Length: 118
Image (cartoon, rainbow, N blue to C red; front, side):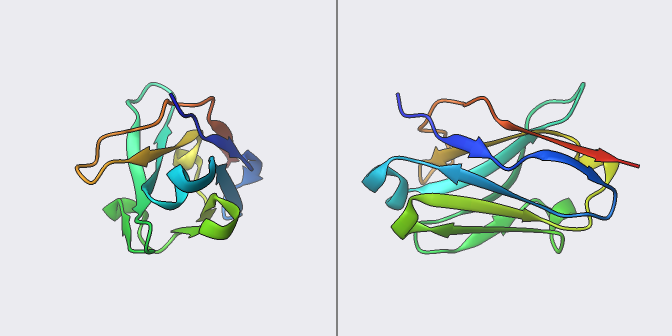
């Protein structure tokens, strides 16, 4: 099963920014919706944002205005720009490809860790 690769996490102070990247293989990536999820300590994994192959975006209501999802199909890469980070944004961030019904179609990867200090 296909697995995407996340990168770009790190340690940042509250109010700072990070840009996460998600790389996937060829045409599979370009043809499908990509989604970002996160899992904070002690919490269930939650959906963050998704972007269709044509660039239409959706966000979790609580993150609108601070996070921006984008993709570069020529590079088979997706991004999550995170601004005005808060300590509660701390967690492991994952990217997957999604079916039109919103089900995952790629295996969960290792994720990339984001830690926001107060």
